[in-house]
Each structure stands twice: as structure tokens, then as C-alpha cells.
Length: 260
Image 1: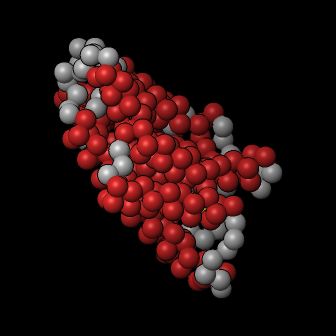
Image 2: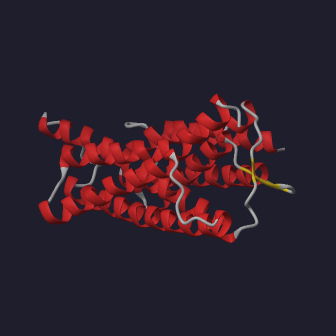
């Protein structure tokens, strides 16, 4: 049954990606309905695959699937997909692949602290922070393409003004920064509660803090110096890369390369 959910969700994401491709004669309502259906089915697959009687299965395959689900969900709820359908061309095909990973790459990794409330809160907030940041990175890439087309005199009549999109972009970054701050704080509380130490010096924590510093610096630069355009894009992509390495990269090294 769970494999069927994965397959249906992947097909729905693929159809949604096709519908969001520039020039496709699909109404906005039709695109939204496809994405909503994919999210519901994917959510059911996530619950069925992750929530096990003996604890949470947070293997790398499930982690990638959850991040993809949350990323599409954030893009849908914040109407980033509605305002810039090209974002769907970036995130929806990735989600179609990610939802299949637990089926084609089965591996179990039980989370031993699922009964600890701080642990659950930390993981939930951290994954949501990743989703906001990834959507912001996708929007920044699409905006860069729009800006280049505008300079060549090929403006997209359906796209909102760049200044409007820029405001939305920094609101996404601001929300991601707040969530990342909460994730770091909850991680400290969880570490103190379980291990008796408020902070453990690990590669995961190092990359997460570095990402937090970059996004904080970007927001400060935007507020004080009016940063925008390619300068802001470099900061966004660098911060996103560090954040992805902090969690998903660390899980890949531990579970795939080291077999832990």
C-alpha cells in the first residue's frame, strides 16, 4: 500500500511539473489542484513510512522525501508556485524523484529519542527551516533568470514585478532564519536534556551555525545596505548549501559511507 502511495505521488508531481512548464495551457486552478493532490498523497506516504510502531524511521531516503514534501508544501502555501510557476519546474521534478526514494532505496534508521519532546520539536522545526530556505533559493534562481531576460528585452508578462518578488524572497529568508534559530535553540535544549551538555561540537552543528550566520548577515546587509540582486543570490545559495550539508550531507556520510 505504501509503495502505491509513493507511485501515485510521484506521478502527480510529474504531472504538476508538466503543468507548470512555461507555455503549457493549464489554468492556475488546475495547477494548484494537481499540487494539492500530490501533497496529500505524499503526506500519507510519509506518515505510513516514517511512523512505525517501534519508533520513527528517519533514514536518509525518508529524510529526503520529507524535505521535498515540506518544500513543495511551503511553495504552495506561500503561493510562490502561483506567483512564479517556474519554481515548480525546479522543485516538482525533484519531489517526484524524492518521494520514490524510500521505495527504491529501502533502509531503516530508527530515531532513538522519538519519545523526547525536544527532539521531535527540533527535527520538525529544522526540516521546516530547510524547506523555507530551499524555496527561497529556487525563487532566487528563477528571479535571476527573469532579470537576465528583462535586460535582453524579453520580459515575462505573466511574472510579477521583480521588486514584488524580491520582497517575497526576503520574507521567505526571514521566516527560514527564524525557524533555523528555533531549531538551533531547541537542539541546544535537547542536547542538554539528553546528553547533559548544551552544545556538542559536530560537523552538523558547525555547518548549521555557519548557515545561520550567513543568513543573518544577508538579512542585516539587506536592512542596512539594501543588498539585492546577484549579491543576495550568492549569500542565499551559500547559506542553503551549508544547511543542506549540515543535515542531509551528514546523514549521507554516516548512513551510506560509514554504514552507521
